[in-house]
Image (tube, rainbow, N blue to C red):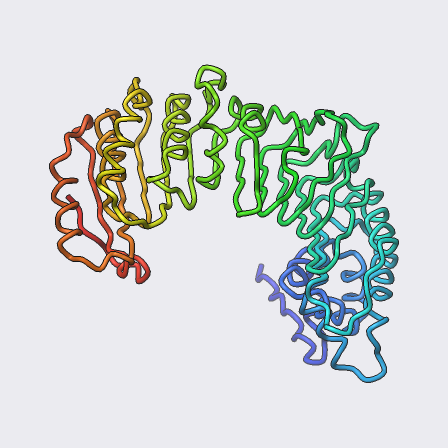
Length: 417
């Protein structure tokens, strides 16, 4: 019996194909658009209007605020009213919310603390998971509803003042990542140690009053403290050394470690990566601080240091080396595989430091040294390269890669010895 042919009807040329895309596809499209353009899709059809009202990612940045100046009759006062209107019209929870007040124009109205409180109260009650707030002028307090919100997992703050809730020993109960930039931690906690039970990553950049931010974070794995403004006591670090796997910090923060007995520091049993920025090899306190830290990091796998170029004072270096004899690492760094040193000048102290690491690292695989672009004397470069080649290595697999400063910026390969 002959089969009947199934003839598909020809597509209607007038049909709006984009309006009939699956909802998941439409939502992905909106995620790729700035918030103002995502809002405009609501004008395409009722199908897109429904998607926009359910869209769970809102970013109010320079792209959003900039559009107001392009329309006549829309004064600056419209900024915050529009944000309030958008939040109130949501059909589904906003999962990700970012607000960059720094994007406002010079003659823009000032954001009131009451506006901020209203927005974040609404977000905290409707399942928000990611919040990012940035403000370049003035100081706004983080609403306490965000501190106690149980749905937020990632929080980023810039130029915000942080007051501790006095009757809440547990803060940010579900947060796994905190990124604080130019945040001031006010001193009103009276010595309370706050618990952040699920925190895994903490970034503090140019923050003030860090010593007031006393927290217990048993799941913390990554800790980064950078920026000239940061001042942290050694005992603050001691609270977290047992748990973290990654430590990134300014070299000058080691100054406070010089007066602390090594025995009083907990063993950083989980620490695998150390990154030091603006490290001064010629500073005795910084050098002693890193040596103490290395002795307390038996499972360290990677060490990365960005130095600061300084003149090589041979006499001062000799005196410093004598003072450091008692601080030289006693045990081998049995897990260390990678060493990276940027802005390397080839000074006496730097050479001593590299020589020591080579002799104490039995499974070392790679040492990457980037020469400082301040080095003008080619003879100096040749001299320290030859010395590096002659240094004894505890690991037969250890390979030293030297990258020229000018080539490093261009991504070119250097010399391998």
